[in-house]
Amino acid sequence: MNQYEEIRQGEKGALVSIGAYIGLSAIKLGAGYWFASGALVADGFNNLTDIVASVAVLIGLRISQKPPDRDHPYGHFRAETIAALIASFIMATVGLQVIINTVRSLFSDEQKIPSLNSAWVALFAAVCMGAVYIYNRRLANRINNQALHAAAKDNLSDALVSIGAAIGIIGAQFGLPWLDPVAALLVGGIICKTAWEIFYSSTHALTDGFDANELMTLRSTIERTTGVRSIKDIKARVHGSNVLIDVIVQVDPGLSLIESHRISDEIEQRMENKHNIMSIHVHVEPYEATAIEPH
Image 1 (cartoon, helix red, strand yellow):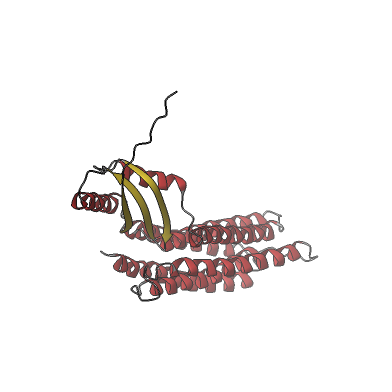
Image 2 (image 1 turned 90 degrees about the vertical axis):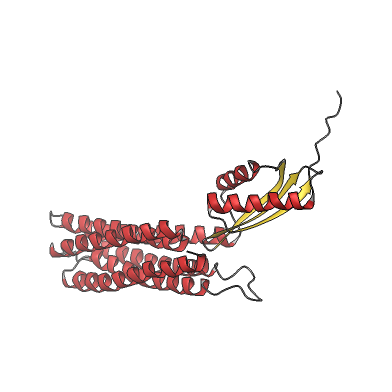
């Protein structure tokens, strides 16, 4: 399965998420208003933002499948990251709105106790989102797709949000009507937290940030390649779900051009087999031992 086939597989997860969010947001909003549960209404609005976020991921996956062209020699894989960035702004806006509305309700004179039936709706939604999370996580691990990993993370947070809403609703039945809006406040906080995490990871990737520990792991694999005397420089960046590497290796200056090229091929093969990295640019230079000055 090549990279483009993996992205097409990832579309299935985005479509499953969209279908689940459409159904659950309608159920939560209807039940939330009917049973007077602020936490369930907030959870429903959370799922509405998730629909937009999942659609953005789906669009990003579709654009990512476009092959390299004159203006995009590396392909269009970063469309996934841009879509996730847009989704984070949408989620943050709704999360803040939920928090503002909830704070207003906490200081209102009228406190409504939500029906216990809304708690069962929230728990049902938690089970559904838990199943979607498991499906997307397994699919993301199988095809190694970062956009789908982010979607699965969002699915898990939604399941936890629904559980929190149910706890608030049940607590309100025991003479604590303020517990339901407090649960809604936590829902808004979780929406903003998830938005921040997606925003941070997206901007980190778009500014060519790369995990230092992972770079050391990649460096170690190259250093153990037969014929490599040292690594002069190595850089890596994330391009969608792919990793691009530029490395300068030093080899025995007595080697022929053909032998040096064989080392480059070996490095490329090792990185593909061990780390599933398809794009690596290897520059070979003659090794020069650093002279040790006499004391």
